[in-house]
Length: 269
Image 1 (tube, rainbow, N blue to C red):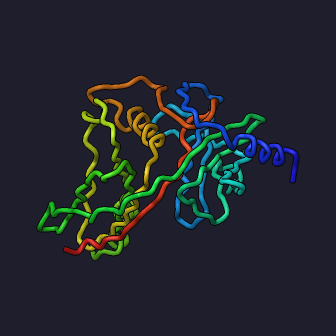
Image 2 (image 1 turned 60 degrees about the horizontal axis):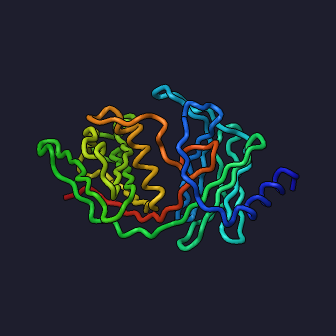
Image 3 (image 1 turned 30 degrees about the vertical axis):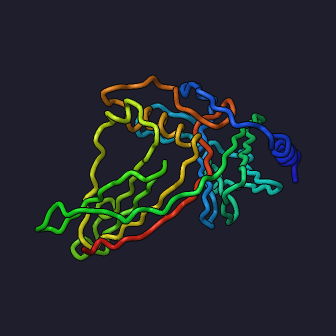
């Protein structure tokens, strides 16, 4: 084990009692790193992505490669390995997060340390999937998105590549990936948010839905993040650089731990 790794693991122990802090940072500072990471109760290789900020629409973020990334829960420390090399994407071994534990992210990059704390909250079951017919001649349907009874992210994967008449088409014409957010606190920008694109699909499509629980801090991050990105340009706007984070100074983004519940539905009324 090299000296860099020993120092990193030692800092995880020292930071065990640190309280999470919310920073409001200027994303125009190009020395910042962006952290994207959600650990879940799914038994899998968990993923954390590190990159640099970018401002141009549809730009490709510069990866932060060669960092030491670890997560501590109690006395257990899980190291994350970058794969592929140079990608800025870091994977754990096959693990799953659990409720009633505090998870502590530690990143060491260019001799600078970044930390975050997060806890998982339980998720309520998903409600039955609702959809309606929009074109009786072609048997085309559309999801009826409903807010959850708790703050959450609902992720939708809809596939119809197997449906007769759609075989062999490009994936972009037979696969949809979207998110629906339920946030408990409504601000004026949420009330006036622009209409979202509607996804339409044929009878026989398969809908995979995942619901992610949100902690209070994660919900606050999403509210400000959506105000700065998806909801910008609505009737009321907000200033750039106000996105909340639970990461220590020098980093933006969010480190979260979520309970995931899921279901799969065949659209066959």
